[in-house]
Each structure stands twice: as C-alpha cells, then as structure tokens.
Length: 73
Image (cartoon, rainbow, N blue to C red; front, side):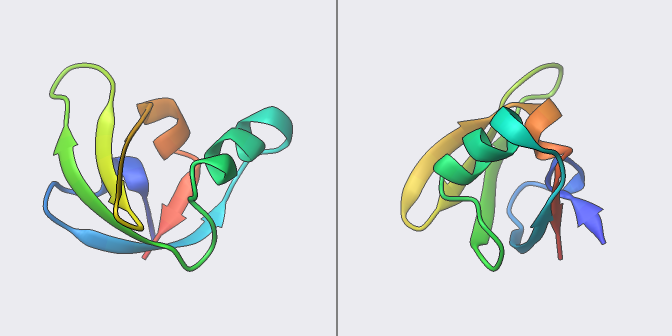
C-alpha cells in the first residue's frame, strides 16, 4: 500500500485508512476523504504544496503533510 502523497498524477485510488488522531484526522475527514472514497489526483506541485484532487465531483487541494497520512490502494 502507498500514501496519497506517493500517488502519481492521473491516477485514481481508493482511500483505505487515515492515520493520525484528533484535529488532523477530523480536518481530512471533513474534506470528504473517508475510507472507501475514490480519489483522482489531478496535479502535484513539483516543489511544495499542494496536491490537487477530485473527490466526489469536487476539486480539493491538500497539503503534502496531510497526504502522507492517507493510505490508498
């Protein structure tokens, strides 16, 4: 398994679990990233943040530090 940060542009993956606790986990889940969610990686900034995603028809940006906490398949 890999993290969302390791996922290449143009791939669609499924969220398997979210590591972390408290406010960080809640922030990720509030964006709609929950277990079983399909995520399409649209764009990854080459040097810094963010990673741009499409989740359930919505376009999101997520920090790479948060993407490291999302295990995908």
